[in-house]
Length: 545
Image (tube, rainbow, N blue to C red; front, side, top):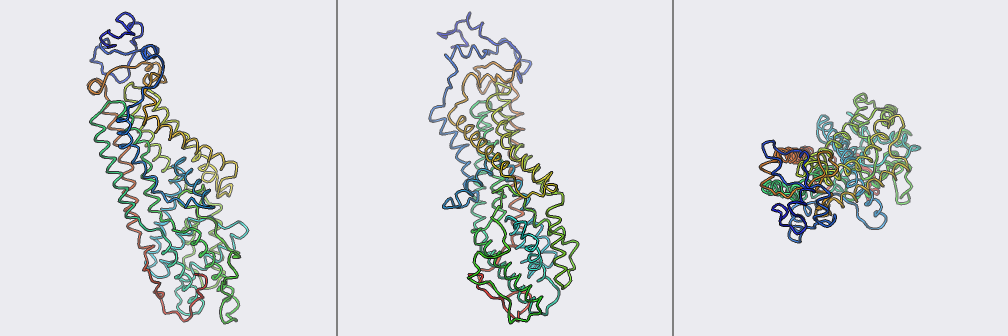
């Protein structure tokens, strides 16, 4: 009615006063500009009687929800802690990091996953089975836990290096080695039984999500140029980091019970220390002073809480420090002092070395998230009205909010971490990070809500007023016109190709790598005799109860 001049609000005379004759970004030159009817923002307000949004009807809203919103439920596959009792806080903190700053959580997960891969490589180089496999598996598990307190860190590392690497000695004689190998084998078996299973079903559900995503893209291109479809596709691309985060969280193999895992590790350290003291005293007693029920919670050497998969913002570089310094200490002597020197080198590297690997994976994760934000921005920006609009601006703001926490951790724990000697954020910065995470979460919820309901389907957003001098107008055209006279296909193709291929490639690499290193944590259900040698003395097993 507006186009043919029969509107009750506009006539051919009054419509000329509200028409926009300025430049139109993205419009092909061969079209006669005067034939393309565009209104100014003020003209749109007059026509619509204000800036009230034209909400989608139930059919369209449900279609958007089924195609683009419901698949985001894959976030429920993240390894949440139980929300019961005292773990409610840890579950809330993990959710804040995963969804409020995915690049921070993904960087921590990528870094740890790389350390697991390196542990597997070292185990294969050392023979691939027996004590070496147990040593590097235990080390990969410990990398997901907070470090011991500074006052106990040196002594704990002394005992840890002794307990992990003394069983790799070429010697086959000695009760001390028998006990250490037995303790190590029992701990490795217990930790393998506590590793979370069900990777294949979750991976299959993830493949279902990715298949649904492909179908959604195909359907979106069928309606190429239609605003609601274009912006819905951009929404799907925006959250393309989510399957990547889920993939690596699955492959990172967190324990079923973090509390039980670290409880066993601390008891094992107690017994290793007992063997060490017993050996230093020339085995004067019949057996070491084993851990007993009276020692529950009284262990001097303790690792901290489970911090894997970016649950809390930490630098967890124990495995990297051990693997790096073991190159210089591959031929450890049989005396305890050599293991103490190894532990001292590990601590020095842990606290003072440049954290280059951690920085590298942090940058990779930042690039992954911003790739998705950028591709979503391209799609919305180049969907007429071409220019910076509500959606493309909201995507940029969301990306910026998620990056604040990443920047805090990157500078505090990465770039300046080795100077500051920090493994976690100061309390003030930690609170600030969570505030920004929550704001980013609210922003993501708002973006989804507006797209689901059509809340941005108003004059202000349709006119792309932020894009002046190339914006500030709206039109009444549809899909066929945009296909014919705007180059939307190119930008949709670029945004969709890069925004879809990157998550697919990252997930494929994660699952393929997980499959290749899976033998590090596989074990029979029944504990077996140590594969290296028939032991002459077995350790006490009360600590496993």
